[in-house]
Length: 167
Image (tube, rainbow, N blue to C red; front, side):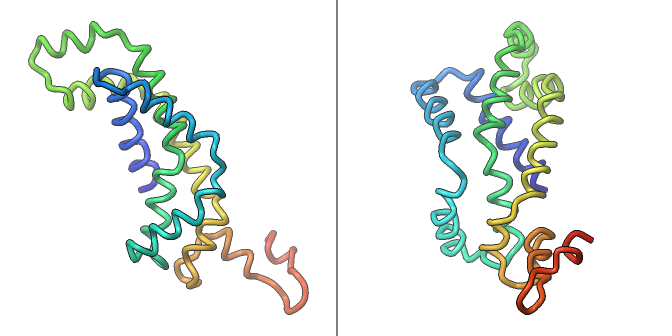
């Protein structure tokens, strides 16, 4: 669910920033790129507050929403570069044939950026799998815990059982 949602939202935003002409497009892109400089740990408390307001604590949706949208600045940047490399003549030919924007995006542009989709899917899956801090904060029940935080609970009374965790 996480890679699909992440690729869908990121590719649509990147298409809008690369191909559509609107006021403030470059400013929005600059703000988006500047968010890549903010460490993820800075946003833990605001994200937690959002999940509390949405009443999503101790649910899988808290993990899915944050993981699906957390790497979006990098994904949007990569997809935007892919969209800018595609000639506008393909888009203009589709418009002449009667295609709308969404059909151009879904049937022409997305198949042309498959290498970017595969690469960002791998990165998104790796990020979601290796995420430790967010699942530990959001989920307190053991039946909703992901593998990393669940393994960290395998401890003795006064020591950490590293052989058991590594096995």
